[in-house]
Amino acid sequence: MELGLVQVYTGDGKGKTTASIGLAMRAIGKGMKVYMIQFLKGREYGELETAKRLSDSFKLVQAGLDSFVKKGEPGEEDLRLAHEGLELAREAIMGGKFDIVILDEVNVAVELGVLTVDEVLPLIDERPEGVELVLTGRYAPEEFCSRADLITEMKNVKHCYDRGVPLREGIEF
Image 1: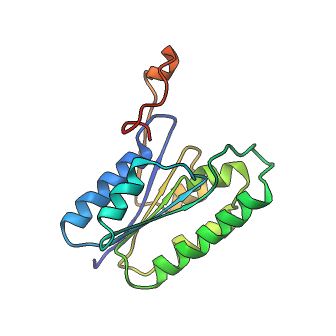
Image 2: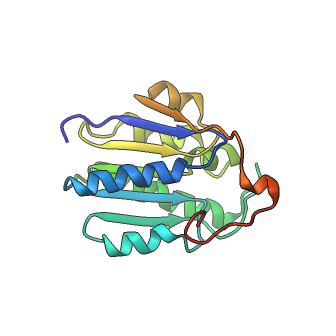
Image 3: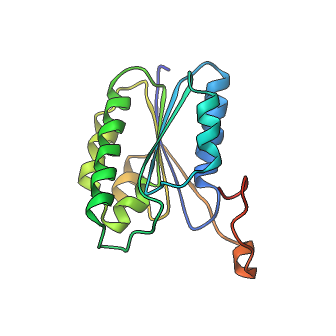
């Protein structure tokens, strides 16, 4: 890719991760390679199985636990996994093997104090020109937004959770 841009998917609505995976599927269909790091996630989401089936084109790594992180009080394991994920992101962005790198839930990782803005900014500022970088999650920091070429805000208008509908396999995970 000649010109890689920075995209931010944020907001309180559902669909940020799903939109980034949709972008990945479109790119893979055109022969591109995608690397996705899921910060704060350790659950067996459906996209993990998809990534295994597309392993030549789509690498997905989780950098989190299957538990919630209390804002401002991340555990040592949360910090370790997030920083390992950050290093994997750096390698994917700088390594020349991937056209698109997705940092899923990186905005939330910063909001919760698992990562800092200053730790993530070099990935944006130093990425090679031909790498598309996607940052997802609620609470996108202004520093990310000011560097973005595209920002999509998902807005929650109505959600089935409000009626008590539980997570559904294949839809929410």
